[in-house]
Amino acid sequence: MKKVEQTSATLPPLTEAQKADLARLAAMPDAKIDTSDIPELTEAQLAEMTRPEHFRPVKKQITARLDADVLAWLKSGGKGYQSRMNAILRRAMLDGK
Image (cartoon, rainbow, N blue to C red; front, side):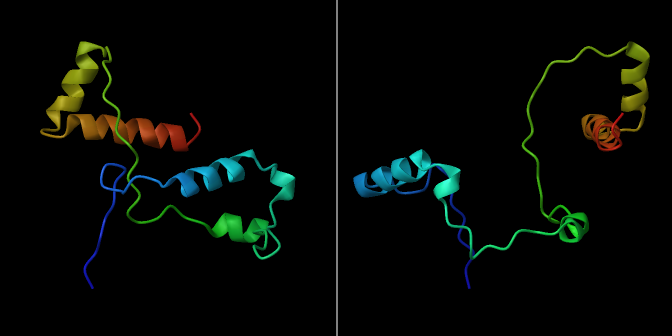
């Protein structure tokens, strides 16, 4: 089976009926949505969840000022210093620091 990937650029445009249906759904209050066929997750189920193996956060280009010695240390590890910087920051973020 051939894998097909779509992006917003390759999807066909929405029909007027689809646009109207989406607008109707967006205007519907949460209390009116029937979720009876979707059981709520328990705390135990939520605790067992992990990020999908192929999760890729969106990268955002920035301009940052670093101390010269910090930048030298990052670059001393060779190619990929920006990825190392991202990994260090992600680890600090996930550790809550």
